[in-house]
Length: 185
Image (cartoon, rainbow, N blue to C red; front, side, top):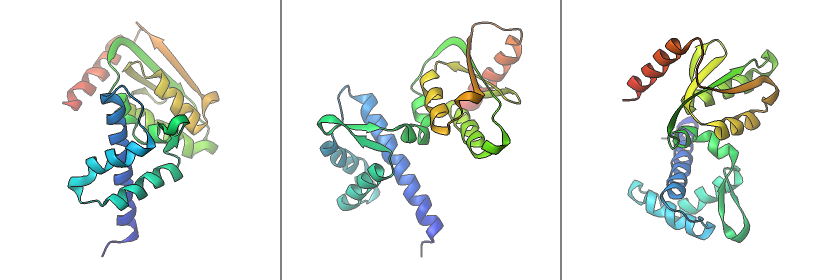
């Protein structure tokens, strides 16, 4: 028998898979995904997992109801910021390294602990590495994803984002970024 907690984990996994498939769709084709095509596309993706077409329609409905996707003009499907946060690693992996360093510094007060923890977790998923207590570094231009995270967690007044080419701690930063690449392999 499946417990409620196991059921929630399964549903959460299916939603993340669905969002991942949608991102793959957007990145592999240069066309707009229509709501009418979404069920067919998810059906193709989930067929081998034994999920029925009726369940796939329900997943599509749940994605809309949970505000992960939004239906726009002409029946087009758009991912919301909430969805992008949920699968931020997948989005971050699409960005190339451009040689510049991005630093994030934040000082989010204790009364916003939940937002601070969510923001920290999100920038870690993007690939930022901690240099000091509230100073993080990455070598990809993820500014639009960082902006999404800042808006989603409502912490704009507590976060600073910098783009640098050189600093007095370059050796330390290079060591941290080099370790990141080794662990990714």
